Length: 314
Length: 314
Image 1 (cartoon, each protein chain N blue to C red):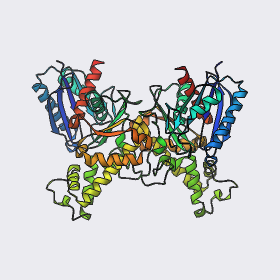
Image 2: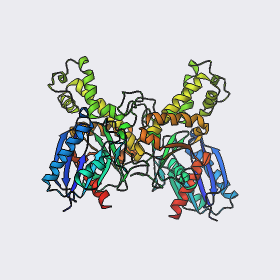
Image 3: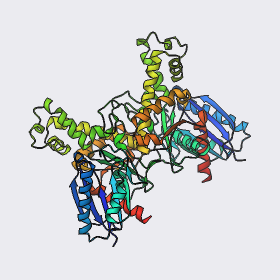
Image 4: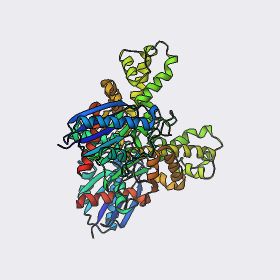
């Protein structure tokens, strides 16, 4: 049995896992990696989490796949300036993991990785052309064309989180304004809700014991809290516009949406589908289905494992 | 010598031409086909223009390529509802031309066709991954990936003119609002200028003998007319945002821009490049060059000829 180590690095949490060559998970381990901790502490914790799953799997890793927000340099395994990983620029992740686990390591954009994972083990298995979108701390995209990942000239295609939705909108970590990610990522939904609380004293979001998250906004919206409904529906409208733009450019058969915010289920898929039906060109809107990631929460991890399998075996 | 008839159908003018298998034009003929004339009269005039070039070339057409605004059904050769060709929905163009010239006819989106033409005969000959944008009566896009046209699931990828730039912006012929095409196509530039004339009595655009066009706005802007400068630079800013979105999604090596509005040259390429450098992600902005179509004015015609060659010889 071949053992593959997958590492899914996120701006809020990260996952390490070991699977066999068929993508069957042997062990996995989720840890918090908030940006506030900085790259040194977060990387150390990710390596410890990886140690643990490798030990649980009985050691002997053949290859390592790492998924991470982009843009990045796939060939050297190094990160560029990544909006949701401040301070990580220039780190060579493949070297770090390869030295620790004595196996070849492959780096890919986390959303491209998740797209490859959905193509290999998930919702995109039967479909040649689809787009994967992760809506999480940030928003990332992966594009599958003819069954293969489309990476573009510099290996950084799919930066869907940074298409402009509102030209003079809120500032984005990437340095631009009004990016999709500033309007409907999990972080954005929490930020927008927190920013409106004082003007909405009647909202139940004022009574939380913990900081507001996209999940708490979704929950309050599902209970009919007027302010939460407004914040959530605005975010879903903007997400729908972003998906409609991608549909108009790529005419995909599927848009698969994963990431923490997609756990809201119908509360996300219904309004986003409605906006795409209304705002994308009819012939292209009729072609597309918008569905959840089959790998769910583990879409990034299964993607990292799929990247290692593809790159190692090719 | 093989003779290929190419037909480039536009919402303002159309071109018929005959070339040999190397793309050397033997004859071509440009005619006005304003939407106001409707499909019956325009099609009749296009057929007459085609008759003329076929006669000039000495007859004996081997294949016909037709480029036209989308969305359309490539397999049946039929148009869907095309924003810039009102009334043409359901027409089977391949049948009409095939019967007239007794040769197989192939229909493609005009911008995809122009992209294929630039890949075969033009600015994209040495590049695997690029995007072609026509900025004309409307705005259309064609995508080349790995040297081949990327068409998407329903053959209608590249509807870049209909990505949303201003969510609640002006109504578009496609039924949506704030599409790229409503903000910076030739038609849009003329419409926006005409709409602002009465509030800008000092503008030299008030003194034209003919209706305002994008060309007259460009000319007045180049002479320092304040109102024209504002209209033109807003349009170029919006076009730059649209190109930046495409760059973020596809990470192309080139964006080739053709169509009537691209005749403005540096007045278009400089501000659009500046906006892309500022608004696309840095790594992706660094990868891309934004350049004019090598086939210039004839990009659509050369594209239609390239489509016929590709489809007929495959």
